[in-house]
Image 1 (cartoon, chains in turn blue, purple):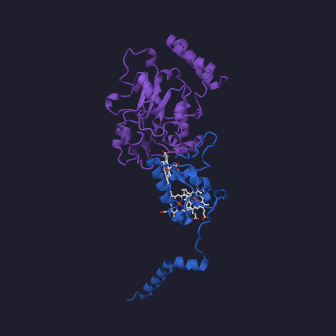
Image 2 (spheres, rainbow over the protein chains, first blue to last red):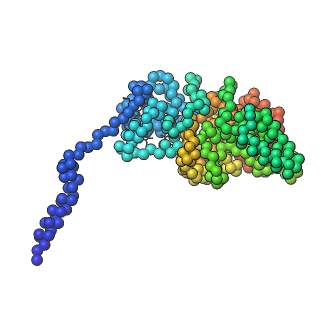
Image 3 (tube, rainbow over the protein chains, first blue to last red):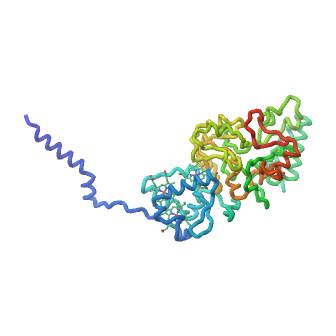
Length: 143
Length: 277
């Protein structure tokens, strides 16, 4: 008794299923998804708080640094790109320039499947109340 | 200022209660009527007080609060400090007491000061309430209990701080605090705000389910040269905030000239909130 025929048929079916993703891509002519398109509002100016080369891979480190300096060392201000003092704040500094979170932070994070949990607590400009009640919070020179 | 419907209902119900319950309650109702007539500007709602010309002490070493309960209890309906604090810090006002989050709150005198209370205590004190918040103890038991270092005593000025990023929600600090100053988020505050159609204030982040929160003497406002929001909001200047280490500071002056008590002094936690009773 020989099962050769059955084995060959089984092997052919196996190879077909195994290579299906490749053959499907070849047949459907799919292209790789391009890098997400990031929107930066014109009010944001030309520069980020650090260079773009630094920000792209290391912005999460910068945010962690800011967080610890603010909360644990009460060190709240830093010199911004144009020399003026800015607050080390996620909601009030990053999102002041990058006010379109959906088309910037989220677009890149969704593409990469990263889901920072910061927004469980931190707020976005659309979420918050009109700034009538907001007390003056000008950074102080002496700080 | 006119009398609005809510105030009218409050006054009317208190007054009718006074008729039934006799003179002591009537006197209280009269107080409230007086207040309603004259209007207590900013006793409720979004009143934040006015930023002051003088800034809080910058290089303070031992921040402390003196609460003038004598003046405070003349206005039993005033919640200006509580409203202001809970507004700027986005503290939700859950309807169910089991979910309650509180940074400042009022408590019956006998519960606030069990040591100072006795059977025959002055009638108007007995029925008054104490204004309570985190005592920022010199010897804080909550700090010792925290396994992650999410709460600690700031060396420079003695504020008992919270790092919400490190809180894992174990609630040891709640068990350790003898003053009930800490609240646990059983619900998701952002969701509740959305349900209520309320928008959070942008100056302070919210919290999430599973973390503990409490008063931090408005560390974020002090850093900007602003007084704690409760101090600024009080229409009667009941709250005096300052540096105990500086002999010329108003808090030292008050402590020197007025008799003050602290909550549960026998526990040795050395609270930094003093009460003029």
